[in-house]
Length: 318
Image 1 (cartoon, rainbow, N blue to C red):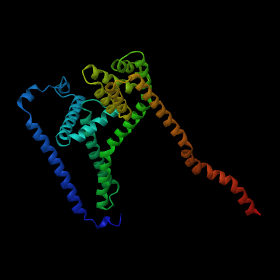
Image 2: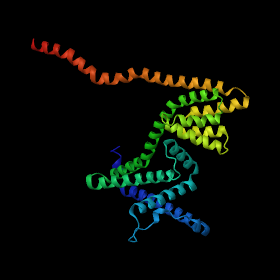
Image 3: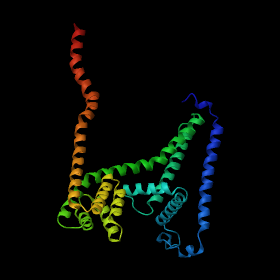
Image 4: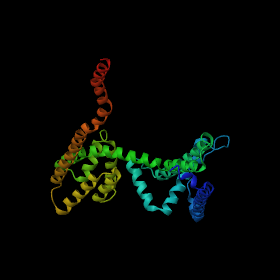
């Protein structure tokens, strides 16, 4: 790749990149200005002032409150921009944030602002590194380094978010069979599905806090008038498990066909326990294959050395 770098026109590449950045900034601020002008006078009069706008005794704004206010404005503008231009992507990111545990209404705006800030911040740091640490490099190499580092910083919050989602999904998947066992016990005790959900959410608060929180939210939605199957599907979307979607479908089919819910729950609970056992056995069977790498790389050379070196030394001395 280094053979082709000098063939690029560095001035032309820099001009194109600068033009794209300038166009993006102009479009962003123009869009923000248009949205600000679109608000009516009634909305401006009804706008609630936040506590972050309070002044200190000397008439100057509070430092922490001012920083929080600026961050909130940046998050709000970024959220509005994505809502107007890409609502499908916004809903997708918002669902990921909920699955990762960030259920606050302003979490989406802060995430988008953090992604933008990380990209710009690492781009600037890469530029400073290229100017002061490695000033002898070709200009094209410096620009490519800045672009690569800036792109990595832009996607860095996504990697962190996906890691948290996988961790929570693993915890939820290991705890969901226990929820199904409690559902079977509750159904056999004569409780309805709605009452069972609320009871189980209280019982697993210490062992599985994430599932308990989401089940409590599903119970609140059911009490508010939302259908049971829709509440369970929303619960499955929030925890990110396909097993919960199957559970919601099973409950709906049992009610529509008039079959016993307790029998269906018992069969589904056995299936969940079987899946958890199969996952544990799969990890156990994969352990010898994983151990072969450190054994081959670290232990085998030592064994070969202990067995061969004395023989080699004896032959050299003779």
